[in-house]
Length: 155
Length: 320
Image (cartoon, rainbow over all chains, first blue to last red; front, side, top):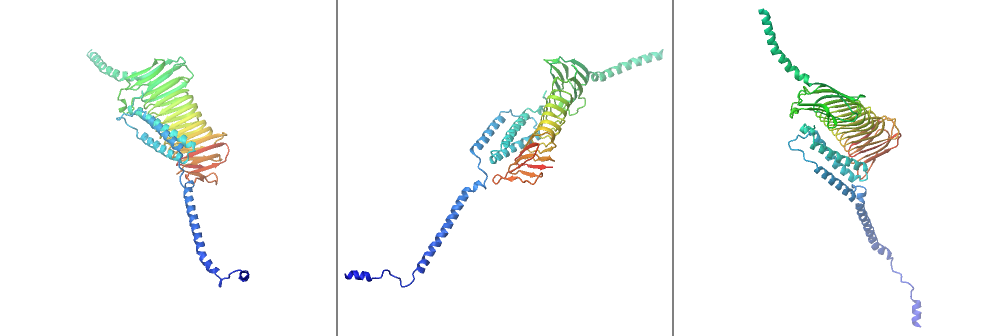
């Protein structure tokens, strides 16, 4: 009975002698601030990471597809085989200077067109121009191997 | 008596000296002159092999071939006859004739012949002037070719000689390495191709195809149904005064510049690669620049014709 009475008289809550919350809050605040900085750094890192992954899409040159590279490779192989099939001009024959210059121009154009096709693989006009350039190079090389001016006897 | 005897002796002596001299100088010259006629059976082709000199060919409605003029002084053989199912006109020169750059004494011939006869010719430096023919194939090294008022199948091929064409109809293909090609009043399917020689087309109609490696190309288009132009480093310039509707222009260069002049805007689809540029002086429209490949493109709406312009590193200019 005595015990029941003591329990009944006991205070329902213990009130601290002073307000402890400001101290607790001051201890909690730095932790909250550190979390924000980490979040910011993490966000930045993730952002940079994503950014670095996405970068080629708008800044770098497009990577040519395997099929474009393969196509260019096949065209080049075929072209070199055709050129190799031509007879070699006689070493004593005079090679016309202007034709040599034009052959060089055609070779450079071929390289330029291949690079352009890597950048614009869907541009059919470039592909057409590349095929034409190859044909002109072949024709001119062929012409040089049987050039009438070299022998003066076309008849 | 003495006088008469002396006179007679002198005359005989003079005759003995002068006559052989006259024969010596006159016989070879007269032997090089030619004036011959052959009758055409209506089917045999003509083949001409003339290394140097000048030749004038004139087509007509007759059935004879008439050759006149002077044969090369250095000729070791001259033929104008029917041989192996063809009519052969041939001048053969000694092996090393080309070492003598002097054209003195070279052939100077005129051949009139049926206009519908099939004719092929090969030469080294012979200049050819031809008129009113229908089936012609010529291959020359440095000789110039002038052809006028002809229609049919025409194939001309030169290394360094110039080709000048006027009034050519139906189907023409002219090719040169370093010689220039000029065409006016052409009509039909006309293909002109050069390596370093320039090409010029004026007042022509039909489908024109012009191709060059480093030579410049200039086309004045007024009644074309199609124009196709290609060049590697040579410049392309088209003056558009077109009256024909729905014409298609396809112009392409690798590094050569391209200029399209027109007073009335036509539909444009232009594209340049990296290093290339598009300049629009027809309107305020600016070309779109691709961020990744640095290529430019421009589309314009117009009327009458559509031009597809494509360059890798040249400049495309739409000018007035």
